[in-house]
Amino acid sequence: MSAAQLEVTQAQSALDSATLTAPISGTVASVGLTNGTAASTSSSITIIGSGAAQITVDASLTLLPSLAVGQVATVTPAGGGGTIGGTVTQIGILPADTSSSTPTYPIVITVDDPPQALAQDSQAQVAITTTSVSDVVTVPASALTMVATKRATVQTVTGDHEVTTQTVTVGVVGGGKAQVTGLSAGTRVVLGDLTATLGADSSANENAFTGGGQFGGGMPGGGMPGGTRR
Image 1 (tube, rainbow, N blue to C red):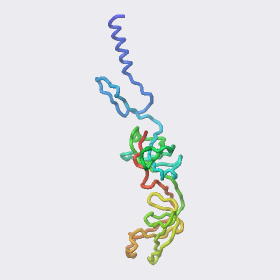
Image 2 (image 1 turned 60 degrees about the vertical axis):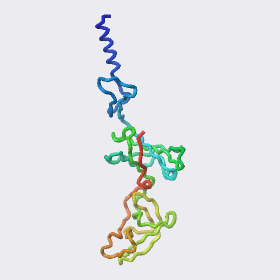
Image 3 (image 1 turned 180 degrees about the horizontal axis):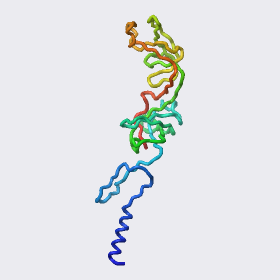
Image 4 (image 1 turned 90 degrees about the vertical axis):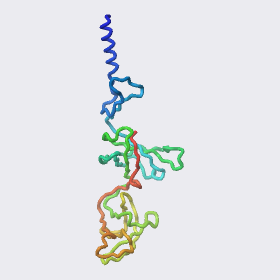
């Protein structure tokens, strides 16, 4: 083999070695290589693959009884861009941190068709619907004064602006509203200062609510923050 042929063979071998083939199909997200410089062992190319994404959030021990595989979740990627639907697919039985006096447990939410905003190691807010009801009477949670488990009092307003106290049974609570039984649809309830005058301009102190629409009982505090795709 001549020197020229040897150089061609070596060049072809070097070219073949320089061609990288990704193990999966997807979109190149970042390239940790610089043209013309030697690559180090830490250099990498990140590819966002297709398929489902999994987001892990930590739930406190007190929330575990209300969680179940199959529940619907709403995922909001960091930076906005709208919400995406997900499903609870796994509930950890071992605490995420064994050294903590208030243990939390990993909850895995799967998003079947994730956007690029849910790439590896990205952050998202997660809210899980634990219970939902329809065709019920609801009132703002601020209108209730809890007196026992599932029992509360509410101030109602009659047509002549007389305020009376009624006891109601509280069902599902979420999104700032509460399901109640013991009130009729259209009943006006007091939301503001009970000592304020209820007159023609009392709209700030009372409101009317009707039965009908559906709402979900989300996690206390608006959901589980800090979910991370892993």
